[in-house]
Image (cartoon, helix red, strand yellow):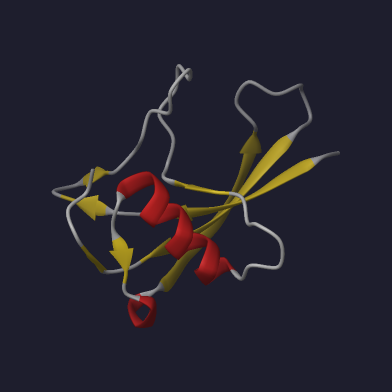
Length: 95
């Protein structure tokens, strides 16, 4: 069984969760992505949030939220996505 390893940013406000819609996609996703090279979870989270949301994660506020697995959307049956999720404070305005 193949597994896609992703890091995700959980942002809850007013009982709502932040999600994003990528170009060419038909489903909303939790912001985040795959690590590049030997990045740590924290490095991946910081980079992905800067790229996708134009925010700067405050590294010292990153907290583990949970790890979740499910069938990967749009992929062949049996391909799972494993999302390791974190919360954090940030600077900047969500874009």
